[in-house]
Length: 152
Image (tube, rainbow, N blue to C red; front, side, top):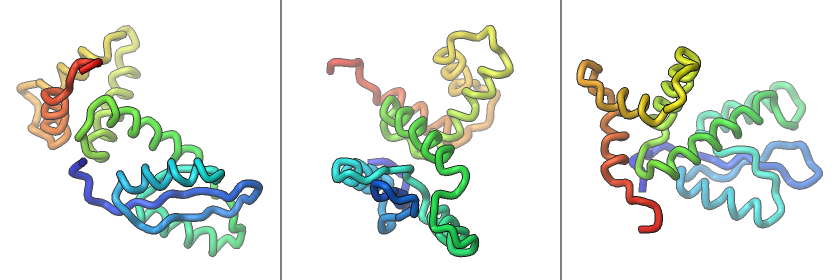
C-alpha cells in the first residue's frame, strides 16, 4: 500500500452520454479498483482525479451549464496513465514523488536530447550527493532497493 493518503475519485461517462460522473472519494488504490470495475461494467473511464479536482470540475460544469466533458480531461487521463505505469515499475512510490520524477525525466530528456539512457540519468539524479534530500529522492531509493528482478 502506498503512503499516498489523499482522496481520489473516478471520473467516468455512461456509454453514449457526455455528462461527467464521479465516484465517491476513496484512496488511490480504491479508485484504481473502482475504475477497473466501472470499465468492465461498460462505462468510459476518463481518469482518476483528486477529490479537490473532481469538486472543481463539478463546479465548473454547473457554472457553464454544459454537463459535458470539460476541456483538459484527456490530459488528466494521460498524466494518470503515466503515473500509474511508473508506480507499477516502482511500487511504493507515492503519487507526488512519481510526478516529481516524471517531470524531472521530461526536463532531462528535453535539455539533453543526446542522452538516451534515462535510467542512468534517473539514478544519477537520485544519488546526487550535492542535491538536497528531497522526499522524492528518498522514495525512489526505497523503491529501487525493494524492486525484485522480473520473474521472482
